[in-house]
Image (cartoon, rainbow, N blue to C red):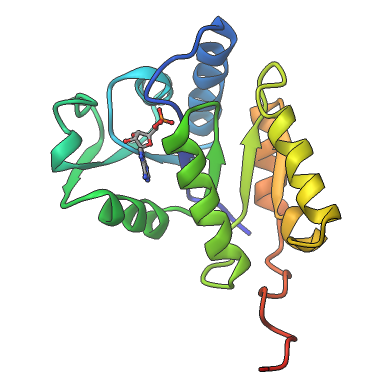
Length: 195
Ligand code: AMP
């Protein structure tokens, strides 16, 4: 698939390890170098602000989507190509998904995980056929990926749905993988008979 815009989910904090900031800079820069539009939560704080600033500094286009209620708390970024202010969190996530051809999670907290898992479950159900990935930094997500393998082993997630999530430590490798991804995954309920 040919990507035009990529949504990045990431922390509204920077985390304790400088490696997280460095990864956000590297990803923002890589998106701009590939002429990919960055779509993100619109804040100027934490890794959100860092990835946006890096993309802008490298000449990239950045679209932020922020709920009115969070505009002050997450400090709506004033230098974006476009900042859309929406009614609430659901509208934010729907709009980010609508505008994006692929999704990447950097390190982050509960909001980042929620956004990643929601878009993944939408893909699993066949609501969209867009690729998604994790940018791994310093083993930040290693316990999560082990747990996901455990869930597959316990029979709650199919291997093909687990494999929808690409993981790489390199923005370039991750973007190549997302670009090459083919939406051939059968939706969760496709071949099950009604009971
Ligand atoms: P966090 O990873 O918790 O630092 O949050 C990262 C981003 O996710 C922030 O822009 C939060 O506003 C956003 N966020 C927080 N809670 C949710 C939620 N329930 N659904 C979607 N995004 C959220």
